[in-house]
Length: 357
Length: 203
Image 1 (cartoon, each protein chain N blue to C red):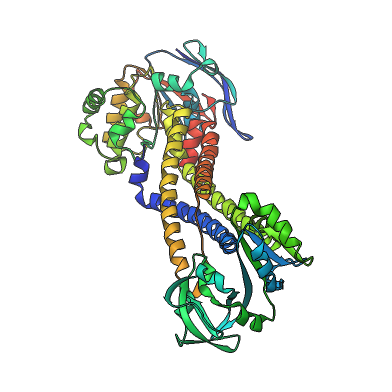
Image 2 (image 1 turned 180 degrees about the vertical axis):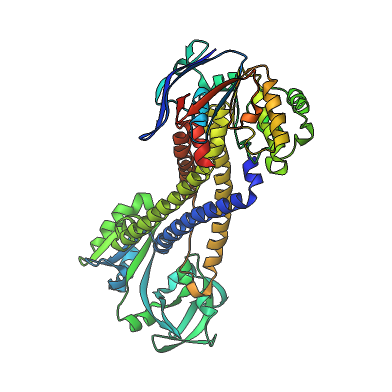
């Protein structure tokens, strides 16, 4: 059944490469889109069940909240810990813009130390492993023009945090002129305490907005924009990739109309011919899919380690994407093969032979 | 018996065949002749069910072709076709080209190839053998199911004189109703029935 592939190796390899490229592009674009959302979501979800930010501000970047609220929040029954964070961006040495995270001391532990120690006094900073590799002086660094001493190098599972620096929140306050961007509160029992603790925090200050991080991620405008953009890009990628697969398979089948004409002239039924085509196409596309998956996993892994991207490019292929893409790819390949095959099945054999010569 | 009633065929506005009616006796050897463009190949395609005529009816032993319920099976069991350019599938070997359309055993196929003196070509691909050998392989493919009707469209069109004679002798020796479209009058024998076409009409 697969003799045509073996006999025309060059053609088969070309089709395989094209299909693999189309599938891999869907994998990569969708995975990178998902990865960006996932990284932001992970950052907020890590050690935070509740997020507290300034009321009426759409973006954590512009939020300014008094971190003195941390003390009364910590005393609320059911609260395990409360942390303050300032998220900012600015010039770090020669890098024109990178993430600067000012955090309370009890959040340092989120950044896994690779070497050195956490900041102990004002003017000390730990740097992400991506940015550490491009520092001129491993001991000193300037953040927005102010000198800091590097006390350690950290690694975070959230890719883009590796491309930034972490300082004490008091130092960040002097850089960004705000007390905190948001507060993250973790609970002892998220299911049992969430509503009660949110109400208790709201009662502390009328100018704050308090949400569970899950609700925040679902409703936060920035995430909505990222998610919509990512979905649009993924949809375009799916559409273009699938279109390429349909065209490839369609061309492959069209190319063999002459053979179908001969087979029908020999009395082989249309059903048998179409079945053979579908089996061939399915096997070919599954090989392309496996190759594309392997290449994508490899590339995504490499992208995370490219210094230039400072960890901002991170993608993940979850089971949902894998199976969605597998089903879509096989379906599109079959449609691509089936349409010309069914059209050919309705044409008189001699016309197929003459046209296909 | 094969009967054609008022067969006409058009490609768009262009008439290729006009009101052809004729009968062909079972077991006969018939040559359809005529100049290039006279409609020989189109007529042969129609009588072999490979092309539906625009008008008219075709009967096989009294059964109209449109009433044949399993046309594929009918083609497989009752009809053998030899094309001018052999039309062997290029990625299949000679043996596979023949086996593809048949349920015959390997021994039966190889016996047929031996009878056509091409047994040693069984494992070769069409582009590895000569024109005459390809045409003999195509005849083997047409013969393998021992069909009642064998149609051959210019089977010697690309062969030298020696190979042409071999192919004609092979076809003439078959135990079937054989219809050959050919412009080569030199191969016609007095015992053959000759149908001549001119501008799509019977002469």
